[in-house]
Image 1 (cartoon, helix red, strand yellow):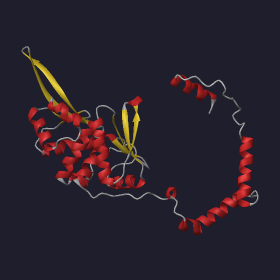
Image 2 (cartoon, rainbow, N blue to C red; image 1 turned 30 degrees about the horizontal axis):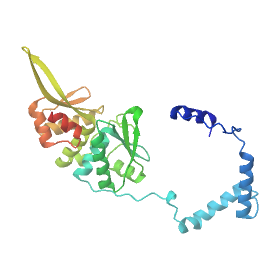
Image 3 (cartoon, rainbow, N blue to C red; image 1 turned 90 degrees about the horizontal axis):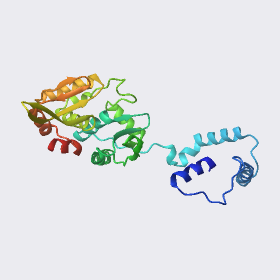
Image 4 (cartoon, one colour; image 1 turned 90 degrees about the vertical axis):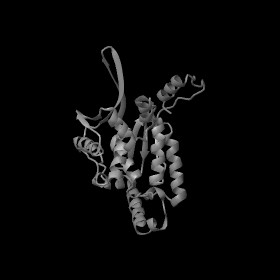
Length: 278
């Protein structure tokens, strides 16, 4: 270990370094390592290969012609992936991905608040297990106050991309809800639920009239993708709610619309349910 790192760890852990540590040059080990490496090569090949490039070329030739068909090395093969059929559950998961998720070339990632969304994180992980038969990785980033739910399977990324999720910057691509979802009422409701559970908020609006305070709930869904804003507003309107677009937000302002939203669309995020119930 570098001395600088050892001292840093010592300070953070508040544990002093041992008095008998030995401080060596960074490359002090290379002589002994080279001898050990030479002995290993002699034991394996009977001699030190004269042309390392030739040896590698011959190995690659063997691998392409015979080796890859004889030996199954897990690291060289893509892991099997379950591609769930289109369903209400998958549509809701797509909404979650469109809200606080994203696709890179090799991973699907959902980022949620480590306190406010803690119960919802458990729901999302359980949904991934049911849909794709895999357990995602969960990474806590206290400095950013978030958990990252990560699926590291290129097969899952490819499948989600084929369903309409963009790879890379979603806003720059001005993404929208896939047609297979908008054309099915149940799928559309589920997708809006996933979107609002991630990029939506339920809050209390207060105002004063003649010295008396009045309070009631409102809802807003925020997106910087204009096509998605219009699609969500249209779906809410078709379901009997008076959706209003203001800047980046799709808003529901009345008590009646809030009641209808939670009756028709509902929420899988306990945070929203608790705020609405109060």
